[in-house]
Image (cartoon, rainbow, N blue to C red):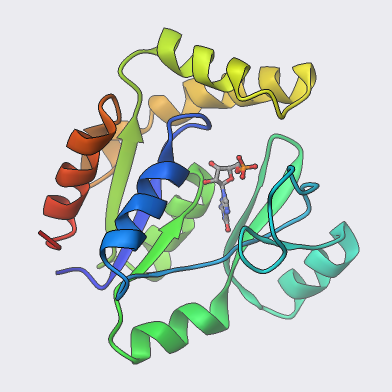
Length: 182
Ligand code: 5GP
């Protein structure tokens, strides 16, 4: 089994829900907590959902080599703190990164053995419906996420495998199979 798994897919595809369900069933899997300059959405917790940083603090971390990968997405910066990922891998725990396309490409260079999985929606119309009805993003942010979704969906072939997140239970079972957890 690949120790490091990267999960990528367009905004609104339901990666977060899928990953939370996976963690509930497989507590040995460690999910990396990213840093971001995005403002917290309601209900998001510092250190659990993300480490919420100012742009200056984020850029200091970049300069210090503190991120395994980082990228700009829809106007905000996102990055994977390097140290905890390396520490958990050294302990032999399966590590999961849930990141966007540019970050996945960077990890492909630094961890060529990582298993890279792409999550896709049943259709673009369904993805658009999910992004619009989430109700937490501004009209402008929704527009940027939809544009970015087209770019991400076009990159599916770069990944080791792809799965459709239509029915959640089916997608979860497929994810477990792909990660050799079932
Ligand atoms: P959101 O703002 O919806 O939480 O996340 C926006 C996008 O950023 C999602 O596609 C998510 O997977 C991605 N993302 C979250 N954390 C990271 C990270 O550490 N690095 C990169 N490259 N993307 C991330």
